[in-house]
Length: 296
Image 1 (cartoon, rainbow, N blue to C red):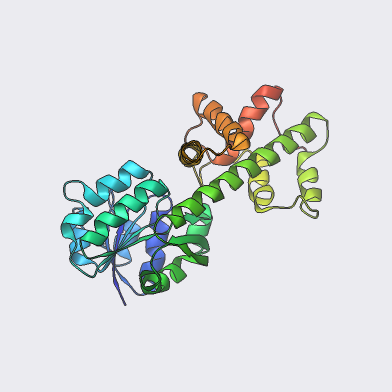
Image 2 (cartoon, helix red, strand yellow):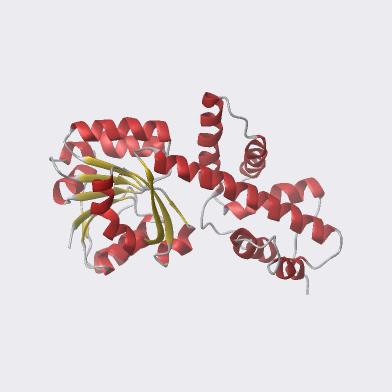
């Protein structure tokens, strides 16, 4: 069993770390909000800094919100880089810039360590159920080394390519998810405004070509008005910024991604930054002056 460091124990990181402990690994933990009691009770060892985590562990996993957070955790004062020794592996499972990822991997490689970018999809439910999709950018040997850990956290695990390619794949994932949320939102607003029962419309659509995971899970959220975050709007907004910035640098047009981002911007402007991303429907509801409601 491996000595594993885990930095970032929020909505996603906490259940992911717990699954590694359940898998028999020794976990060295730190998080800006402290180490949750559940992880400590399960045998996780609290550390005072990312540096200490890196000193204690052979494989160090980061799961934090954004690119600047990863940079600070890895290279800031008391960061992972200060605690590394040759032969260790750094695995970033956050969703961040592919360009920055390549820069970070080069810095870690110069310290004699491997770098793996492995962003995930599946939300809090996927993290708790060890059913995440994990998109990996890494050399083959580094991937093979950490694959047993990924198997404890996810089900669909793919080595996409070299460093940065995992993050590029995650950006693609976020484009598709955002546009699907937008499509389901439009359909349910239309159905409800037209006088049809949106719950029954959703049920009917689940048996046809329009069926999707978004319609299944987030369509139900929209109808039942359950917007507690599995994945916050502000984080999806961040991911679409990565998509749009990357598209601009490559001369690529992403018109519907830009529209989805504007809907997220509207939600944030109306106090919805920390709502689940399925709450994008509220932006369309405001424009229609009509709420999708569960009809009885």
